[in-house]
Image 1: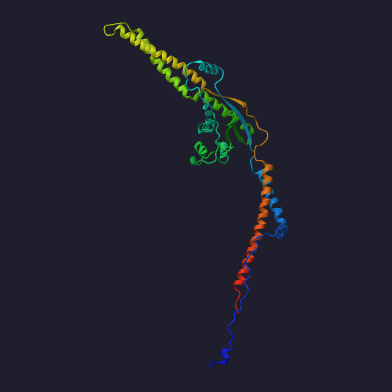
Image 2: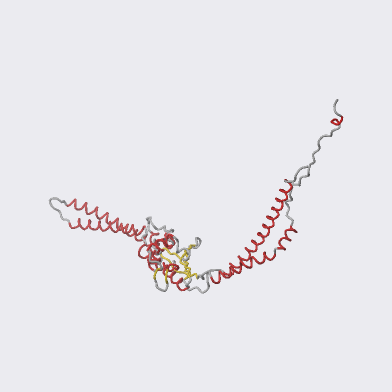
Length: 341
């Protein structure tokens, strides 16, 4: 018979400990957040003020004062006699190539932004000491290092864009006006450099710029000289046993025809070349600036104050969330390690 004690045994009971609720309230308690900010008000106000004070010291005694001088140029394609030639060309019953030269003025900004001009400015006006003042001994008027590889060169200045922070050119697509800027700590030198850039541009247009029409005119002139010599040769010939009168007349007529045609082409080429002459007028001459262009002290200080103020608030909120996250993690770990009965 089964033991009565066994029949009266109760099934094993297990004690279940309630688990903490894992649901978190995602809503932000604005009142608690305000209290957090209120407790940390010293940091919220002190941090931006300290950063702004540092910014004031930097803009007043660290950042160099830079002045900007500028000049405005208006490109002009043909004027005066050129306009008369263009009007004459319009009355001719022939088509003259090269008169549609609306893109010729683009050569001015192209040259102003070219590496050729920058190299001329650096070499001609000895700008390397200004571009690399830390390597230049102003008292001894020499480079501080005797190592040729350590001495700045024109190629280094061009490749590193040393002029980018000083010299710039902009063009208004609507008006076509071109503005030249030069920044320097010496306001008088900034004005002088703008004048030098304009002078280099004028020299390039007068002596180095060769248009398509000019090349065509020079080619026609060379062919006309040959045709003129050919015509003179046959005009001097007289009939002989080996040279008949009919042949002389034929060759003279052919040379005359070629010469006449080339004379026409030469006049057309001259008109086209006159139309392609690229020039400019200085609308606003460069000046010696009085007000500094940079640094913008008020703007820098105001932005520093505002940005660091937001940063201080975010730091306080982030630190508070970090603390709460650590507390929740510590509570979860304590619950998971509770022993069972």
